[in-house]
Image (cartoon, rainbow, N blue to C red):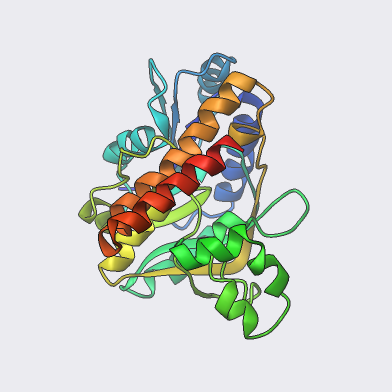
Length: 297
């Protein structure tokens, strides 16, 4: 039985997906302490991704790494595609890895040993950086309460980020007061690199499929933390997120509009699910109006 299942969901990112796989396999090859399975699920790509994956699988050979491919006939979305793959996963732990993530520096033996050292530790992420070397803000987040969201969108978070104490008050959206060079607890990483213990993932019934894409990682983290488990940012190892190569960064206007719609739908769903019950109807109506307004800008 593999100790680790790594799930990669692809959609029209053929060349980047191949690069992701190549760097992942290279890093795993140097760690022969346990068996690993890599599951790549393609959401009906039309750019030749499935042909690339079939060819890649033909030439792939390893004694301790197995490669599984799933070809969906339609775009199942991020949550359904990952849940589908997770149901097939045999590992004790599951890593959800974006197809646009490049593995720069990960010692899987050390990482998994640390992950298993605390039974109360449910989720872990490494340092996820962008092309410019800075951390991907989405990988180091606090839950988006009304106050935190206001501070972020009003730029109060940005203004107070370099100011001690003030950044703790106003920087909760991205936890700007915390030292990125040291391990610490966070509310949620992004789905770009989301390592979770499989039994806990199953206990919370996986990703909520009401989210098509975006927000599902926050929602999963929220439910896991509600159960009293810890989520850790562990910067000893680093991966690079080639963000905006798809999704909101696309140049196709039709796809961009659909993606933006999913992005703001996720905001509404998350708020409605986790925060709306705590506020009067008038406050909720204002929040929904602001989300709708933001989506039109």
